[in-house]
Image (cartoon, rainbow over all chains, first blue to last red):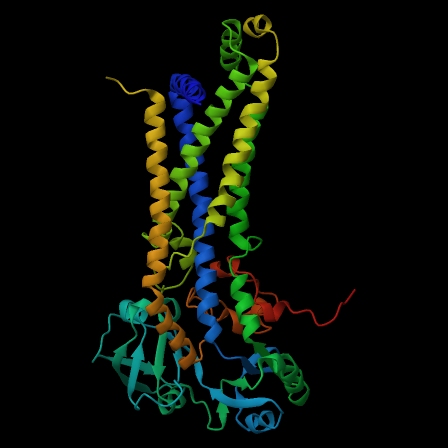
Length: 378
Length: 104
């Protein structure tokens, strides 16, 4: 065993010396390789954590939402629909929700206004999300001006700010009283933005949704399962820019592997020829090339993974921020909970390290099996 | 005495493996530490009946992705194409991809 270990170390010593002889080329290779692993791992860590957090949080969202559609667009729903829905067997409660968007011309940001259930807020008072406070520079005790649907100005006092810990769900929220909401948007009494529904037995949800669709054909039903599935596919690998990033990474690996598999440089071939001429076995040459592949790919892989973790969970994915921000003025600053598991790291290992190492060995095996004399002469 | 090159490399590997191990430990500790704030957020979602994460605030259909209506692809006119950057990041919501009947 000791002899085996010593042999590996000797070959590793030789491999490292050989790599250091082509220092510039190999440093460039390792840097690009690390960068590719870093981007791939950052995308994997970021999307997995967002999806996981969404799946935990949105399990508490309403079981069913009923919206009225007019010409394909979401419209206000009459509260009289509640009585019709209540008559369906299995429905335990139906409530009207009041919510909407407000465009703030001062900052150019869009806010989401919600009337909380239970009337915790007095008229004239609001609670705002941390993102609004940061963008508009307003705090507890300050007032915010809003222009109502008929052009009048109303001033609402900020009673509270929602904790910055929950920015992922509340950054752009304004909690407002029912009266102020109706005054601001002119929503007539007897109408709500949409309805939320609870059922006695969750297994009956889809049956109840079908009954509602038959009873009220101008409505559509959004089930909690659909919300969860939407966020499960939110950064799907097939969707949008992710496919571009993955394609870029894939192409980089194809170029790496192509470079290796298409053959060795004449210098490398000569090196193999000399090694064979001085008595190295084919297995020794393959072992050397295996270590070469491992040194390059393993160093890049480990560094790439660690840098990706720091990037996503310590630096709030700062390199992705310009992409995620888009044209938004109000952008939530959230720190994701690091939901990572060994299977993600293992999958990244097999995507990045394994093909490169294999691609290094095959051409070396071909070169190592030919006559050293002819290899040295080429 | 000069160190062997293989020793330097193996030390580098060992440091990286320790860092990966620390990364998992940090993730697990952080997950436990954040349980309290996660519970608070779950309570907020339940109380305010929230349906979406606040990821993109630039367009209503990306702010409330799961609530996007059938007009989403044509926000401004029937021939207007999707133009918000976040629209290119996200897959369409499940409720809009539902196939009621096979057309062909």
